[in-house]
Image (cartoon, rainbow, N blue to C red; front, side, top):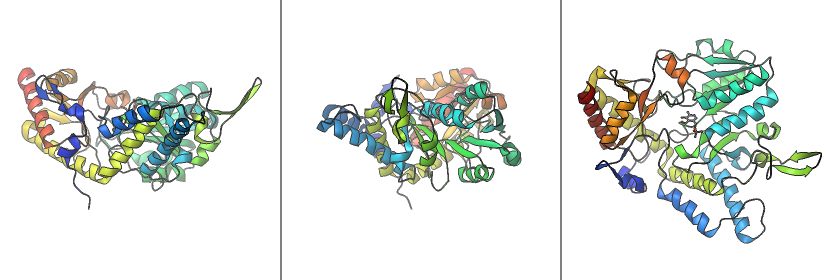
Length: 412
Ligand SMILES: Cc1ncc(COP(=O)(O)O)c(C=O)c1O
C-alpha cells in the first residue's frame, strides 16, 4: 500500500503556485512541457552556489573536491531512481532529452549503423526521437521504419517481427506526450533483443510519473530531461548500459572528455566523462539529484496512483460537463495511460482554447507538441494539452472545466 499524496502539503513546496494570474490562482496543468521545481530543488542549487561552487574534475582545493564529489554523487542518485546501482558508470549528463538523443544517434548510431541497417521508431515519437535519426540517415543511408499507431491510440505491434528484421535499434517513447499512451517497455525490449536489436527509450514523459526500472525492463538506453522531473532546465540524462557506453566514441570534443591531447591527435577519457565535454551543468546536477530525492521521498508509486486517480476524475468531469463536445485524443481512462489529456472542443482552435483558459489562471499547452507525424496520423493541427503533476488536485480539474465552459459560451 502506498500513502496517498498530501497535495496541500506538496503545494507549499512550490512557491510559484502562490501567484495569481488575472486575479485567479494559478492552475498549472503544463507539467508535460516543464514541471515546476520545488524549493527543495532551488534551495539545494542556491546552497551549492553559495557554499561549494567550483569547477569539477580540476581543482584540488577543498571546495573543488567537494563540488566534484557532489556532481558525481548526482549520477549515483539519478541511477538509483532509474533502478540501477551502476549510475556512476551509466549516467551521462547532457543539456536535455533532445541532446541525449543526439548523443545517441551521433555517437552510437554513427559508429554502428551502415547503409545495410535499419532503425525502428514509432509514429508516436516526439521530434527529439525522430530528427536525430533522420539527420544520421541522410549521412549514412540506413532504413528508418515506423511502428504504426492504431485507431485505439496504441502501438500496432502486429507487424513488429517484420519491422525488427535486420534492425539494429528500436527507439520508442515510454509514454506519448500527446496521447498519454504508456507503451509496454519490457515486452518491446524482449522483442527487440530477440531480433538482435538494442532498445532505446524516450523517458521524458514517463520518468517523472511512473516507476522506472532500466534493469528489470532490460533496456539499453534511456533519455530524459530534468525540467519535466521537478528539476532545473539545462540538464538531461542519457542512461546507457556501461558496456554500450564503453564502446561508444566521444560526442562533443574539448576539455574534460580527454585522457591526453597531442598535436597529432587525442585519446578520449573513459566512462561517462568521455561524453561530457567542457564545464558540465554542475549546479543543475545538484538540482536533478535534489529532484529525484524529493520524488523518492514522496514515492513514485504514490505519484502514479495520484495522477491516475486525477485522470479518472478528469475523464468523468469532462464527460459530465461536455459529453461529445470535448474530445480527449488518446486511450480511454485506465492503467494504460498517463495524466496527459490532449483536448479539442468542436472546431475551436487550440490556441483560442488555451487563451480562454489562461483567463481563469489555467496553464495548458496548445499546439502540435513536437509530434507532427502523430498529429498528421490523426488529422489534427493542434490540441490543447492539460498534463498533471504532483501538485494538481480535483479543484484544478474543476477550474479546467470552468474555463472550457467559458470557451464553449464564447465560441459556441
Ligand atoms: C516525449 C518527449 N520526448 C522528448 C522531449 C524533449 O525534451 P527537451 O525539450 O527537454 O529536450 C519532450 C519534451 O516535450 C517530450 O515530451
